[in-house]
Image 1: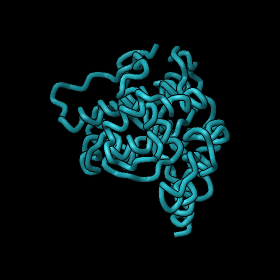
Image 2 (image 1 turned 90 degrees about the vertical axis):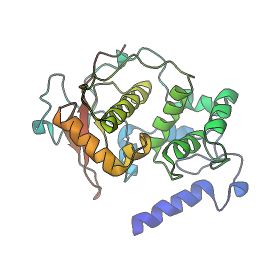
Image 3 (image 1 turned 135 degrees about the horizontal axis):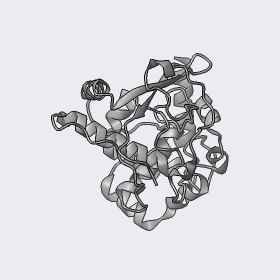
Amino acid sequence: MLQRRRRETRERACWGSSVSALPARRCFTCGRESETDLCLRCENLTASQVEASTRETTHPEWKVDVPSGTPLDDSTRDVPLGTSTRDLSTWDGEILAGAVLASWDDNSAVIRFVDEVARGVEPGKPLAYRYAAAISGEARWLPRSEFVVWKRRLLLDGGFVERPVVSLAALPEDASRPARQLWSSIELLVQARLLGGTPAHDPLPLSRRFLRRWVPMGEGSVRTAMEKLQAIRFVTPAGVYEGSNGRRPTKLWRVHLAKEAR
């Protein structure tokens, strides 16, 4: 209950009682007045700080120290957080983070794209928030880690940035439609993370709560599709992030790539 109240207090700090009561713009994460959706302080938070400050983080940009060639089974559980052993040169384009990502906030073409997709959805709120609400069908507060990945996704979907040359392995011909739909959405998730500088081979969290909004798909369908992907070892356990201060552990997964990212 206390955590829920803190979350509601934080939302009120970000949005106020109404859009009309807000100043020109506030940071989506901390609520401070800012020229962009994320203030410089929040943009410069380290991954560990973000993880420590977010209770339900379904898409953090974690760097998990799992050397190349580590067996993809339960022997990789309880992998400590650390710096990725893989070189970020797996993506040689511009990294969409910090000021670079924030610079898209006032791009007129991006604003028109979101206005078209999210017509009538939460006008006046940040582009990533509106886009996520339009795609998922849920207007809800986004942790910073989800906020930035949704923002990269809208830039990908709108064709504003180059799509990373990375893809997941082809599913068997008899794979179900939900499994194909989920697999395609996970590929998009890997690409969005790569744009932020996270190597495609890094483990990632794939919670049902996040995926049902990202796909979008019912949570039961997500569960069934994930079980199918696990059965054919296209997604395999790759560690657990043990949350601090009583936070729930988050399971991490590695996905089967078709080819290396460039």
